[in-house]
Length: 68
Image 1 (tube, rainbow, N blue to C red):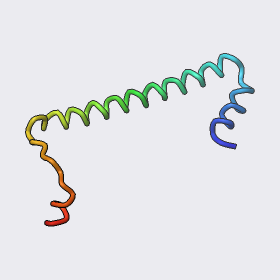
Image 2 (image 1 turned 45 degrees about the vertical axis):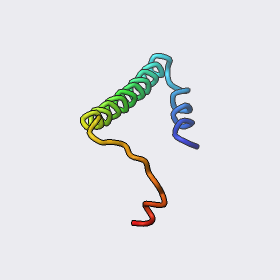
Image 3 (image 1 turned 30 degrees about the vertical axis):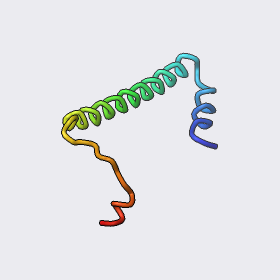
């Protein structure tokens, strides 16, 4: 039995208001995880933005790479 099934079996026996609290808690965890992911992505993009325009993209030749 996986975690989701164990949670379901436990919540199934709780009164409605207690089950609603469990649902609210799970939804708040999901929202926090989404916020953390958004912040992590924004920080990564901000780091990359500092270097925008500093490097020129050249053509890559696999043969020249092997010749070195």
